[in-house]
Length: 153
Image (tube, rainbow, N blue to C red):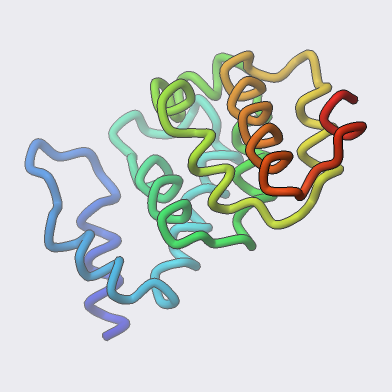
């Protein structure tokens, strides 16, 4: 099974015109085997930033898959990725920052309130990323995870 997952990961690593339906099915059915590869893709994007090959897309898919899998261990790495300078965030994840990032963050949130609060207060953060984090804090407040004072802070 590991070989099948590795092949599926390879099939979604580089941009292609055809939607990789079968690789996504394999990855989704074998989450535990796939997660280390997805985490590595996020780490690669963080380390290479704008030097990342523009046809490399595994990090992009990894964000969505880790969110779908509700992988709490990935939250710090995802936060590190979206804390990169604006230009790097735009290059690496582009429009997903404005459309789905709050869902990804909410689904992977691991309870680290301080990381979330510190990142929101960071004036150098991408505005869209900060906005997504604020939406997550709002939902966490509604869920009872954040108190009124923490929300106002």
